[in-house]
Length: 120
Image (cartoon, rainbow, N blue to C red; front, side, top):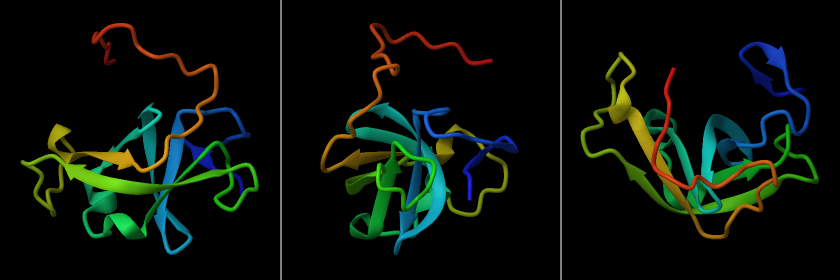
């Protein structure tokens, strides 16, 4: 099946900065590429999965696609103020994943040259 973002079918390459997260060869949640070795996701997606059982899949729409990059997670770093069970989403729900091997990113993803961000 096609991956879906905001209810619209996605084609391969539409969202190159999005990754799938899963365990036991089953997709569980999504995340976003920060750089080649770091992913940001929601803490509730991974707070129950040991690092060695978590897989990051990048570069494909299908979980089992031959062009997918499958990466292992070295470390899961959950925000220290995160508390499982909080019903309202907030910034304390963030989580960073540190990859053992880097993701080969598409050329259209550019490195930031400063620390300024705009949130709308």
